[in-house]
Length: 158
Image 1: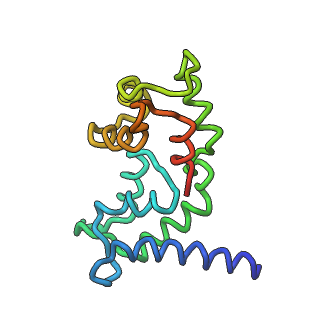
Image 2: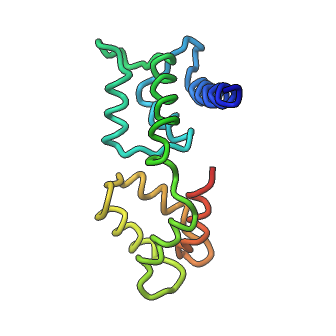
């Protein structure tokens, strides 16, 4: 029981620290547009649909554009406790395995245009800005290739 209480306090502390980064006026609220970033900083990566569902849960009945810390903490405590397994970042090995499926020629890398095409046509759709950011992060500046083992390490990191 003591360990469970300590773990709960640790989780609540992480939630509070992440929220406080965006509570610029120290009023216990943050801009609703920042909630996705806060959630992702806690290593939870919901789909856009799931994020919208959670926002709907924690918004005021008359939306103000702000989310109160108490409601956010309640949601995230539940998410980190009950729903964590389905929203955890994938392991590096799992990410590499997915890239290997895409690398039909077994080169060890993908071309940026090929990566962009795959990421924009399959699964969750990314905006052009998100794609550009991913590619800028993933591309090796010397070769212009996306070496997916290096990128997978970055994606799986905390």
